[in-house]
Amino acid sequence: MDSTTQLTTRRTDLTGPVRTFGAQPVPGPGEIAHSSPDVYDPAPSARTDRPAAARSAGSLSARAEQVLEGNWTGASTVPSRGLYPHQWSWDSAFIAIGLRHLSPLRAQTELETLLDAQWGDGRVPHIVFNPSVPLDAYFPSPDFWRSSTAGRTAGAPRTVQTSGIVQPPVHALAAWLVHQADPGLSRSRGFLARMYPRLAAWHRYLLHRRDLGGGGLASVVHPWEQGMDNSPCWDAPLARITPAPARSFRRADLDHGAPEDRPTDLDYGRYVRLATDYRDGQYADGANEFAVEDPAFNALLIASEHALARIAFELGATGTARHARAARLTAALVERLWDPAEGMFFCRDVRGERGSSLIPERSVSGLVPLLLPTLPRDIADTLVRTACGPHFGLGDSAPLVPSYDLLGEAFDPHRYWRGPAWFNTSWLFERGLRTHGEQERADTLREAMLRTADATSFAEYVDPYTGEACGALDFSWTAALTLDLLHAYEPPEDGDRGTHAGPVHSTTSDDTTGMFETSDQGKGGDRG
Image (cartoon, rainbow, N blue to C red; front, side):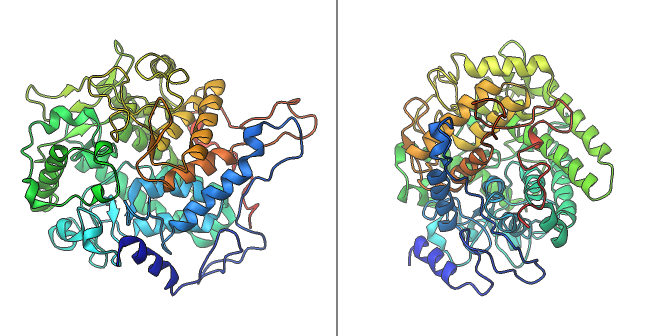
Protein backbone atom coordinates (compact mmCIF):
# COMPACT_ATOMS: atom_id res chain seq x y z
CA MET A 1 0.00 0.00 0.00
CA ASP A 2 1.51 3.35 -1.03
CA SER A 3 1.65 6.46 1.15
CA THR A 4 -1.36 8.09 -0.48
CA THR A 5 -3.49 5.02 0.18
CA GLN A 6 -2.23 4.89 3.76
CA LEU A 7 -3.25 8.48 4.40
CA THR A 8 -6.63 7.99 2.77
CA THR A 9 -7.22 4.97 4.97
CA ARG A 10 -6.32 6.93 8.05
CA ARG A 11 -8.72 9.72 7.18
CA THR A 12 -11.63 7.28 6.81
CA ASP A 13 -10.84 5.29 9.94
CA LEU A 14 -10.95 8.13 12.44
CA THR A 15 -12.34 7.28 15.84
CA GLY A 16 -12.96 10.89 16.90
CA PRO A 17 -15.54 13.33 15.59
CA VAL A 18 -15.06 14.15 11.93
CA ARG A 19 -14.76 17.85 11.20
CA THR A 20 -15.12 19.33 7.76
CA PHE A 21 -14.57 22.85 6.53
CA GLY A 22 -17.80 23.14 4.64
CA ALA A 23 -20.07 22.00 7.46
CA GLN A 24 -20.46 22.82 11.12
CA PRO A 25 -17.95 20.68 13.08
CA VAL A 26 -19.21 18.30 15.70
CA PRO A 27 -17.69 19.42 19.02
CA GLY A 28 -15.32 16.93 20.62
CA PRO A 29 -14.88 16.33 24.34
CA GLY A 30 -14.38 19.59 26.22
CA GLU A 31 -15.11 21.70 23.14
CA ILE A 32 -17.90 24.24 22.80
CA ALA A 33 -20.55 24.09 20.15
CA HIS A 34 -20.67 26.90 17.60
CA SER A 35 -23.85 28.45 16.37
CA SER A 36 -22.28 29.65 13.13
CA PRO A 37 -20.04 27.93 10.56
CA ASP A 38 -16.27 27.91 10.99
CA VAL A 39 -15.89 28.65 7.28
CA TYR A 40 -14.59 31.96 6.00
CA ASP A 41 -15.14 32.13 2.25
CA PRO A 42 -15.22 35.65 0.80
CA ALA A 43 -18.19 35.76 -1.54
CA PRO A 44 -17.98 37.56 -4.88
CA SER A 45 -19.34 41.07 -4.66
CA ALA A 46 -21.87 42.63 -6.98
CA ARG A 47 -19.98 45.92 -6.84
CA THR A 48 -18.54 46.78 -10.23
CA ASP A 49 -15.63 48.67 -8.65
CA ARG A 50 -14.27 45.53 -6.96
CA PRO A 51 -10.99 44.36 -8.54
CA ALA A 52 -11.09 41.28 -10.80
CA ALA A 53 -8.69 39.46 -8.46
CA ALA A 54 -11.10 40.04 -5.59
CA ARG A 55 -14.11 38.89 -7.65
CA SER A 56 -12.35 35.55 -8.30
CA ALA A 57 -11.29 35.18 -4.68
CA GLY A 58 -14.23 32.93 -3.86
CA SER A 59 -13.23 30.18 -6.29
CA LEU A 60 -9.56 30.44 -5.32
CA SER A 61 -10.52 30.24 -1.66
CA ALA A 62 -12.67 27.16 -2.27
CA ARG A 63 -9.82 25.40 -4.08
CA ALA A 64 -7.35 26.29 -1.34
CA GLU A 65 -9.83 24.89 1.18
CA GLN A 66 -10.02 21.66 -0.82
CA VAL A 67 -6.24 21.30 -0.71
CA LEU A 68 -6.20 21.59 3.07
CA GLU A 69 -9.13 19.20 3.38
CA GLY A 70 -7.37 16.67 1.14
CA ASN A 71 -4.13 16.88 3.12
CA TRP A 72 -5.80 16.62 6.54
CA THR A 73 -5.04 13.37 8.42
CA GLY A 74 -7.43 13.76 11.33
CA ALA A 75 -5.09 15.55 13.72
CA SER A 76 -2.69 17.46 11.47
CA THR A 77 -2.00 18.37 7.86
CA VAL A 78 0.67 16.85 5.63
CA PRO A 79 2.52 19.25 3.31
CA SER A 80 1.64 17.00 0.37
CA ARG A 81 0.24 13.49 0.27
CA GLY A 82 3.00 11.94 -1.83
CA LEU A 83 6.29 13.71 -1.27
CA TYR A 84 5.83 14.68 2.39
CA PRO A 85 3.45 12.18 4.09
CA HIS A 86 4.10 13.20 7.72
CA GLN A 87 3.71 16.34 9.86
CA TRP A 88 6.42 18.97 9.42
CA SER A 89 7.08 21.58 12.08
CA TRP A 90 7.20 24.95 10.36
CA ASP A 91 4.76 23.76 7.70
CA SER A 92 2.19 23.20 10.45
CA ALA A 93 2.76 26.71 11.79
CA PHE A 94 2.09 28.29 8.39
CA ILE A 95 -0.82 25.92 7.78
CA ALA A 96 -2.40 26.94 11.10
CA ILE A 97 -2.11 30.60 10.11
CA GLY A 98 -4.30 29.87 7.07
CA LEU A 99 -6.55 27.30 8.75
CA ARG A 100 -7.63 29.86 11.36
CA HIS A 101 -9.79 31.52 8.71
CA LEU A 102 -11.63 28.26 8.01
CA SER A 103 -11.72 26.60 11.41
CA PRO A 104 -9.95 28.06 14.43
CA LEU A 105 -10.51 24.71 16.15
CA ARG A 106 -8.58 22.79 13.53
CA ALA A 107 -5.86 25.44 13.53
CA GLN A 108 -5.48 24.95 17.28
CA THR A 109 -5.45 21.17 16.81
CA GLU A 110 -2.69 21.48 14.20
CA LEU A 111 -0.37 23.16 16.69
CA GLU A 112 -1.44 20.99 19.61
CA THR A 113 -0.61 17.81 17.69
CA LEU A 114 2.84 19.11 16.85
CA LEU A 115 3.65 20.24 20.38
CA ASP A 116 2.41 16.95 21.82
CA ALA A 117 5.61 15.52 20.29
CA GLN A 118 7.91 18.07 21.98
CA TRP A 119 11.03 16.68 23.65
CA GLY A 120 11.83 17.06 27.32
CA ASP A 121 14.71 19.46 26.59
CA GLY A 122 12.25 21.79 24.84
CA ARG A 123 13.06 21.11 21.20
CA VAL A 124 10.17 20.77 18.75
CA PRO A 125 11.13 18.08 16.21
CA HIS A 126 10.99 18.94 12.56
CA ILE A 127 8.99 15.79 11.66
CA VAL A 128 6.30 13.94 13.61
CA PHE A 129 5.90 10.59 11.90
CA ASN A 130 2.58 9.02 10.96
CA PRO A 131 2.88 5.36 12.03
CA SER A 132 0.48 4.24 9.29
CA VAL A 133 2.84 5.38 6.52
CA PRO A 134 5.28 2.70 5.27
CA LEU A 135 8.92 3.23 6.25
CA ASP A 136 10.06 3.36 2.63
CA ALA A 137 7.63 6.18 1.76
CA TYR A 138 10.00 8.84 3.09
CA PHE A 139 13.68 9.03 3.95
CA PRO A 140 15.01 9.58 6.58
CA SER A 141 12.33 7.43 8.19
CA PRO A 142 11.68 6.80 11.90
CA ASP A 143 14.09 3.85 11.98
CA PHE A 144 16.87 6.21 10.91
CA TRP A 145 16.25 8.83 13.60
CA ARG A 146 15.59 6.31 16.42
CA SER A 147 14.19 9.14 18.52
CA SER A 148 12.84 7.01 21.37
CA THR A 149 16.26 5.43 21.98
CA ALA A 150 18.93 7.83 20.69
CA GLY A 151 16.91 10.78 21.99
CA ARG A 152 16.14 9.32 25.41
CA THR A 153 18.70 11.49 27.20
CA ALA A 154 17.22 14.60 25.59
CA GLY A 155 13.69 13.59 26.60
CA ALA A 156 12.29 12.35 23.31
CA PRO A 157 8.69 11.11 23.66
CA ARG A 158 8.15 7.36 24.00
CA THR A 159 4.74 7.18 22.37
CA VAL A 160 5.45 8.90 19.05
CA GLN A 161 8.37 8.72 16.63
CA THR A 162 9.99 11.97 15.51
CA SER A 163 13.13 13.30 13.93
CA GLY A 164 15.84 14.73 16.19
CA ILE A 165 16.44 18.09 14.55
CA VAL A 166 14.27 21.23 14.53
CA GLN A 167 12.88 23.84 12.14
CA PRO A 168 12.36 27.63 12.36
CA PRO A 169 10.35 28.73 15.43
CA VAL A 170 7.25 30.21 13.81
CA HIS A 171 4.98 28.50 16.33
CA ALA A 172 4.35 31.20 18.93
CA LEU A 173 3.47 33.65 16.18
CA ALA A 174 1.09 31.08 14.71
CA ALA A 175 -0.45 30.37 18.12
CA TRP A 176 -1.11 34.07 18.71
CA LEU A 177 -2.71 34.57 15.30
CA VAL A 178 -4.83 31.45 15.76
CA HIS A 179 -6.00 32.76 19.13
CA GLN A 180 -6.96 36.08 17.54
CA ALA A 181 -9.17 34.29 15.02
CA ASP A 182 -11.59 33.23 17.77
CA PRO A 183 -10.56 34.37 21.26
CA GLY A 184 -13.74 32.98 22.80
CA LEU A 185 -13.04 29.47 21.57
CA SER A 186 -9.38 29.77 22.49
CA ARG A 187 -10.16 30.83 26.05
CA SER A 188 -12.84 28.20 26.55
CA ARG A 189 -10.39 25.47 25.53
CA GLY A 190 -7.47 26.93 27.47
CA PHE A 191 -5.50 26.96 24.22
CA LEU A 192 -2.94 29.64 25.08
CA ALA A 193 -2.63 28.50 28.69
CA ARG A 194 -1.59 25.06 27.43
CA MET A 195 0.59 26.36 24.62
CA TYR A 196 2.52 29.00 26.55
CA PRO A 197 4.74 26.74 28.75
CA ARG A 198 5.57 24.55 25.77
CA LEU A 199 6.45 27.50 23.56
CA ALA A 200 8.49 29.06 26.37
CA ALA A 201 10.45 25.80 26.76
CA TRP A 202 11.00 25.70 22.98
CA HIS A 203 12.47 29.21 22.97
CA ARG A 204 14.54 28.44 26.09
CA TYR A 205 16.09 25.46 24.31
CA LEU A 206 17.08 27.60 21.33
CA LEU A 207 18.39 30.50 23.37
CA HIS A 208 20.49 28.37 25.73
CA ARG A 209 21.38 25.07 24.05
CA ARG A 210 21.81 26.53 20.58
CA ASP A 211 23.82 29.68 21.29
CA LEU A 212 26.85 27.91 19.83
CA GLY A 213 28.51 31.11 18.65
CA GLY A 214 28.29 32.80 22.06
CA GLY A 215 26.75 35.97 20.61
CA GLY A 216 23.18 35.45 21.75
CA LEU A 217 21.77 34.02 18.51
CA ALA A 218 20.55 30.46 17.89
CA SER A 219 22.54 28.24 15.53
CA VAL A 220 21.20 25.55 13.24
CA VAL A 221 23.18 22.29 13.26
CA HIS A 222 21.82 20.88 10.00
CA PRO A 223 20.67 22.55 6.75
CA TRP A 224 17.23 20.96 7.16
CA GLU A 225 16.76 22.88 10.41
CA GLN A 226 16.73 26.23 8.70
CA GLY A 227 14.11 24.96 6.24
CA MET A 228 15.98 26.05 3.11
CA ASP A 229 17.63 22.68 2.64
CA ASN A 230 20.08 23.15 -0.24
CA SER A 231 20.61 26.90 -0.13
CA PRO A 232 24.03 27.96 -1.45
CA CYS A 233 24.56 29.46 2.01
CA TRP A 234 25.39 25.93 3.18
CA ASP A 235 27.88 25.06 0.43
CA ALA A 236 31.00 26.25 2.28
CA PRO A 237 30.12 24.78 5.70
CA LEU A 238 29.01 21.51 4.07
CA ALA A 239 32.24 21.22 2.10
CA ARG A 240 33.95 20.22 5.37
CA ILE A 241 31.58 17.28 5.86
CA THR A 242 32.47 13.83 4.52
CA PRO A 243 29.34 12.51 2.79
CA ALA A 244 27.73 9.22 3.77
CA PRO A 245 28.20 6.48 1.15
CA ALA A 246 25.48 6.61 -1.51
CA ARG A 247 24.70 2.91 -0.93
CA SER A 248 23.86 3.59 2.73
CA PHE A 249 20.53 5.30 1.98
CA ARG A 250 17.77 5.47 -0.62
CA ARG A 251 16.24 8.81 -1.60
CA ALA A 252 12.46 8.45 -1.59
CA ASP A 253 12.07 12.10 -2.67
CA LEU A 254 13.16 11.23 -6.21
CA ASP A 255 10.08 9.00 -6.55
CA HIS A 256 7.94 12.14 -6.50
CA GLY A 257 10.11 14.97 -7.84
CA ALA A 258 12.35 15.59 -10.85
CA PRO A 259 16.04 15.06 -9.96
CA GLU A 260 16.94 18.40 -11.52
CA ASP A 261 14.60 20.14 -9.09
CA ARG A 262 15.90 18.41 -5.97
CA PRO A 263 19.15 18.58 -3.94
CA THR A 264 22.03 16.63 -5.47
CA ASP A 265 23.19 13.20 -4.29
CA LEU A 266 26.36 14.82 -2.91
CA ASP A 267 24.25 17.24 -0.85
CA TYR A 268 22.14 14.37 0.42
CA GLY A 269 25.18 12.35 1.41
CA ARG A 270 26.34 15.24 3.57
CA TYR A 271 22.88 15.74 5.06
CA VAL A 272 22.80 12.06 6.03
CA ARG A 273 26.29 12.20 7.55
CA LEU A 274 25.40 15.20 9.71
CA ALA A 275 22.15 13.63 10.87
CA THR A 276 23.85 10.30 11.60
CA ASP A 277 26.57 11.92 13.69
CA TYR A 278 24.01 13.99 15.60
CA ARG A 279 21.92 10.90 16.30
CA ASP A 280 24.91 8.82 17.35
CA GLY A 281 25.86 11.60 19.76
CA GLN A 282 22.45 11.24 21.46
CA TYR A 283 21.32 14.55 19.93
CA ALA A 284 23.59 16.53 22.23
CA ASP A 285 24.37 20.10 21.18
CA GLY A 286 27.80 21.71 21.28
CA ALA A 287 30.12 19.41 19.35
CA ASN A 288 28.37 19.80 16.00
CA GLU A 289 30.63 20.13 12.94
CA PHE A 290 27.99 22.24 11.23
CA ALA A 291 26.77 25.30 13.16
CA VAL A 292 25.40 28.38 11.39
CA GLU A 293 23.62 31.48 12.68
CA ASP A 294 20.91 32.16 10.13
CA PRO A 295 19.07 35.50 9.81
CA ALA A 296 15.63 34.08 8.96
CA PHE A 297 15.72 31.47 11.73
CA ASN A 298 16.62 34.11 14.30
CA ALA A 299 14.21 36.70 12.89
CA LEU A 300 11.37 34.20 13.31
CA LEU A 301 12.55 33.51 16.85
CA ILE A 302 12.40 37.26 17.56
CA ALA A 303 8.95 37.57 15.98
CA SER A 304 7.77 34.66 18.09
CA GLU A 305 9.25 36.25 21.24
CA HIS A 306 7.08 39.30 20.56
CA ALA A 307 4.13 36.94 20.07
CA LEU A 308 4.94 35.15 23.35
CA ALA A 309 4.84 38.54 25.06
CA ARG A 310 1.34 39.07 23.67
CA ILE A 311 0.33 35.60 24.86
CA ALA A 312 1.76 36.28 28.33
CA PHE A 313 -0.25 39.51 28.52
CA GLU A 314 -3.40 37.67 27.48
CA LEU A 315 -2.75 35.21 30.32
CA GLY A 316 -2.34 37.98 32.90
CA ALA A 317 1.40 38.68 32.89
CA THR A 318 3.08 41.81 31.56
CA GLY A 319 5.18 40.32 28.77
CA THR A 320 7.77 43.03 29.35
CA ALA A 321 10.67 40.63 29.79
CA ARG A 322 9.93 38.94 26.49
CA HIS A 323 9.72 42.21 24.58
CA ALA A 324 13.08 43.15 26.15
CA ARG A 325 14.55 39.81 25.11
CA ALA A 326 13.27 40.33 21.56
CA ALA A 327 14.94 43.76 21.52
CA ARG A 328 18.26 42.24 22.66
CA LEU A 329 18.01 39.53 20.02
CA THR A 330 17.30 42.14 17.35
CA ALA A 331 20.42 44.06 18.40
CA ALA A 332 22.47 40.83 18.25
CA LEU A 333 21.02 40.03 14.83
CA VAL A 334 22.13 43.41 13.51
CA GLU A 335 25.53 43.24 15.19
CA ARG A 336 26.41 39.72 14.04
CA LEU A 337 24.64 39.24 10.69
CA TRP A 338 24.04 42.66 9.10
CA ASP A 339 26.41 43.76 6.32
CA PRO A 340 25.83 47.46 5.58
CA ALA A 341 28.05 47.40 2.51
CA GLU A 342 25.95 44.67 0.86
CA GLY A 343 22.63 45.94 2.20
CA MET A 344 21.34 42.70 3.71
CA PHE A 345 21.81 40.06 6.40
CA PHE A 346 24.11 37.08 5.90
CA CYS A 347 24.55 33.71 7.59
CA ARG A 348 27.47 33.32 10.00
CA ASP A 349 29.55 30.13 9.94
CA VAL A 350 30.31 29.49 13.61
CA ARG A 351 32.69 26.60 12.79
CA GLY A 352 34.64 28.30 10.00
CA GLU A 353 38.25 27.32 9.43
CA ARG A 354 39.30 30.90 10.16
CA GLY A 355 36.89 31.28 13.04
CA SER A 356 33.41 32.71 12.99
CA SER A 357 32.72 34.56 9.73
CA LEU A 358 29.89 35.69 7.46
CA ILE A 359 29.02 33.53 4.45
CA PRO A 360 28.98 35.79 1.37
CA GLU A 361 25.88 34.31 -0.31
CA ARG A 362 22.76 36.39 -0.90
CA SER A 363 19.70 34.40 0.12
CA VAL A 364 16.08 35.26 0.82
CA SER A 365 16.94 34.41 4.42
CA GLY A 366 18.81 37.71 4.56
CA LEU A 367 15.63 39.62 3.63
CA VAL A 368 13.22 37.93 6.06
CA PRO A 369 14.22 40.14 9.06
CA LEU A 370 12.15 42.88 7.42
CA LEU A 371 9.17 41.35 9.23
CA LEU A 372 10.53 42.60 12.59
CA PRO A 373 8.65 45.68 13.83
CA THR A 374 11.66 46.95 15.82
CA LEU A 375 14.17 46.74 12.97
CA PRO A 376 15.97 50.10 12.61
CA ARG A 377 14.35 52.21 9.91
CA ASP A 378 17.51 52.64 7.84
CA ILE A 379 18.06 48.88 7.73
CA ALA A 380 14.43 48.26 6.75
CA ASP A 381 14.69 50.78 3.91
CA THR A 382 17.94 49.21 2.72
CA LEU A 383 16.42 45.70 2.71
CA VAL A 384 13.56 46.92 0.52
CA ARG A 385 16.03 48.47 -1.93
CA THR A 386 18.06 45.24 -2.01
CA ALA A 387 14.99 43.10 -2.64
CA CYS A 388 13.88 45.36 -5.49
CA GLY A 389 17.40 45.65 -6.93
CA PRO A 390 19.18 43.45 -9.49
CA HIS A 391 20.07 40.62 -7.09
CA PHE A 392 16.43 39.72 -6.37
CA GLY A 393 14.46 41.73 -8.95
CA LEU A 394 11.28 41.85 -6.87
CA GLY A 395 8.50 43.64 -8.74
CA ASP A 396 10.58 43.75 -11.92
CA SER A 397 11.99 40.50 -13.33
CA ALA A 398 10.72 38.45 -10.39
CA PRO A 399 7.05 38.70 -9.31
CA LEU A 400 7.74 36.75 -6.08
CA VAL A 401 10.87 36.85 -3.93
CA PRO A 402 13.56 34.50 -5.33
CA SER A 403 15.20 32.20 -2.80
CA TYR A 404 18.70 33.12 -4.00
CA ASP A 405 20.66 35.84 -5.76
CA LEU A 406 19.58 36.03 -9.42
CA LEU A 407 23.16 37.02 -10.30
CA GLY A 408 24.85 34.41 -8.12
CA GLU A 409 27.05 31.67 -9.57
CA ALA A 410 24.97 28.99 -7.84
CA PHE A 411 21.61 30.32 -9.09
CA ASP A 412 19.30 27.68 -10.58
CA PRO A 413 15.68 28.70 -11.28
CA HIS A 414 14.33 25.19 -10.63
CA ARG A 415 16.53 23.59 -7.97
CA TYR A 416 14.72 23.83 -4.66
CA TRP A 417 16.23 26.69 -2.56
CA ARG A 418 18.91 27.73 -5.06
CA GLY A 419 16.71 30.21 -6.94
CA PRO A 420 13.00 29.31 -7.07
CA ALA A 421 10.46 31.50 -5.32
CA TRP A 422 8.57 30.04 -2.36
CA PHE A 423 5.24 31.17 -0.96
CA ASN A 424 6.14 31.13 2.74
CA THR A 425 9.17 33.41 2.36
CA SER A 426 7.25 35.71 0.00
CA TRP A 427 4.43 35.84 2.58
CA LEU A 428 6.92 36.76 5.31
CA PHE A 429 8.39 39.50 3.13
CA GLU A 430 4.89 40.78 2.28
CA ARG A 431 4.22 41.01 6.03
CA GLY A 432 7.49 42.90 6.43
CA LEU A 433 6.64 45.38 3.70
CA ARG A 434 3.35 46.19 5.41
CA THR A 435 4.99 46.39 8.82
CA HIS A 436 7.31 49.12 7.54
CA GLY A 437 4.73 51.08 5.57
CA GLU A 438 5.50 49.82 2.05
CA GLN A 439 1.83 49.34 1.18
CA GLU A 440 2.06 49.65 -2.60
CA ARG A 441 4.88 47.12 -2.89
CA ALA A 442 3.07 44.81 -0.47
CA ASP A 443 -0.12 45.02 -2.56
CA THR A 444 1.83 44.19 -5.72
CA LEU A 445 3.51 41.19 -4.10
CA ARG A 446 0.22 39.98 -2.64
CA GLU A 447 -1.51 40.07 -6.02
CA ALA A 448 1.43 38.26 -7.65
CA MET A 449 1.26 35.53 -5.01
CA LEU A 450 -2.47 35.05 -5.52
CA ARG A 451 -2.11 34.91 -9.31
CA THR A 452 0.73 32.42 -9.04
CA ALA A 453 -1.06 30.17 -6.55
CA ASP A 454 -4.10 30.19 -8.83
CA ALA A 455 -2.15 29.43 -12.01
CA THR A 456 0.06 26.69 -10.54
CA SER A 457 -2.49 24.71 -8.51
CA PHE A 458 -0.80 25.78 -5.26
CA ALA A 459 2.69 24.66 -6.26
CA GLU A 460 5.37 24.02 -3.66
CA TYR A 461 7.67 26.55 -5.36
CA VAL A 462 7.99 28.24 -8.76
CA ASP A 463 10.50 29.46 -11.30
CA PRO A 464 11.20 33.04 -10.13
CA TYR A 465 11.05 34.45 -13.66
CA THR A 466 8.24 32.53 -15.37
CA GLY A 467 6.17 31.33 -12.42
CA GLU A 468 6.35 27.76 -13.75
CA ALA A 469 5.26 25.24 -11.11
CA CYS A 470 7.99 23.16 -9.48
CA GLY A 471 7.94 20.46 -6.81
CA ALA A 472 4.66 19.17 -5.41
CA LEU A 473 1.26 20.56 -6.38
CA ASP A 474 -1.61 21.08 -3.91
CA PHE A 475 1.00 22.10 -1.35
CA SER A 476 -0.51 22.86 2.02
CA TRP A 477 1.32 26.00 3.10
CA THR A 478 0.79 27.54 -0.35
CA ALA A 479 -2.95 26.95 0.01
CA ALA A 480 -3.01 28.11 3.63
CA LEU A 481 -1.11 31.34 3.01
CA THR A 482 -3.27 32.01 -0.04
CA LEU A 483 -6.25 31.91 2.30
CA ASP A 484 -4.51 34.31 4.66
CA LEU A 485 -3.83 36.75 1.83
CA LEU A 486 -7.43 36.48 0.63
CA HIS A 487 -8.73 37.09 4.12
CA ALA A 488 -6.71 40.31 4.27
CA TYR A 489 -9.03 41.76 1.59
CA GLU A 490 -12.02 43.59 2.96
CA PRO A 491 -14.44 45.13 0.43
CA PRO A 492 -15.26 48.78 1.10
CA GLU A 493 -18.55 49.88 2.57
CA ASP A 494 -20.48 52.55 0.69
CA GLY A 495 -18.68 55.82 1.06
CA ASP A 496 -15.63 54.21 2.60
CA ARG A 497 -12.33 54.94 0.83
CA GLY A 498 -14.11 55.99 -2.32
CA THR A 499 -14.02 53.35 -5.04
CA HIS A 500 -10.68 51.86 -4.08
CA ALA A 501 -10.70 48.35 -2.66
CA GLY A 502 -7.65 46.59 -1.33
CA PRO A 503 -6.03 44.80 1.55
CA VAL A 504 -6.52 46.26 4.99
CA HIS A 505 -3.64 45.93 7.43
CA SER A 506 -2.41 47.86 10.42
CA THR A 507 0.86 49.69 9.90
CA THR A 508 1.28 50.83 13.45
CA SER A 509 4.85 51.56 14.50
CA ASP A 510 4.36 50.26 18.04
CA ASP A 511 7.20 47.89 18.91
CA THR A 512 4.81 45.10 19.82
CA THR A 513 2.52 45.30 16.81
CA GLY A 514 3.46 45.59 13.15
CA MET A 515 3.04 42.17 11.64
CA PHE A 516 1.03 40.93 14.63
CA GLU A 517 -1.95 43.11 13.81
CA THR A 518 -4.26 41.46 11.29
CA SER A 519 -7.75 41.94 10.00
CA ASP A 520 -8.91 39.56 12.73
CA GLN A 521 -7.94 42.03 15.45
CA GLY A 522 -10.95 43.36 17.29
CA LYS A 523 -13.33 40.78 15.79
CA GLY A 524 -12.88 38.18 18.50
CA GLY A 525 -15.60 35.62 18.86
CA ASP A 526 -17.42 36.50 15.62
CA ARG A 527 -17.33 32.80 14.66
CA GLY A 528 -18.63 31.66 18.06
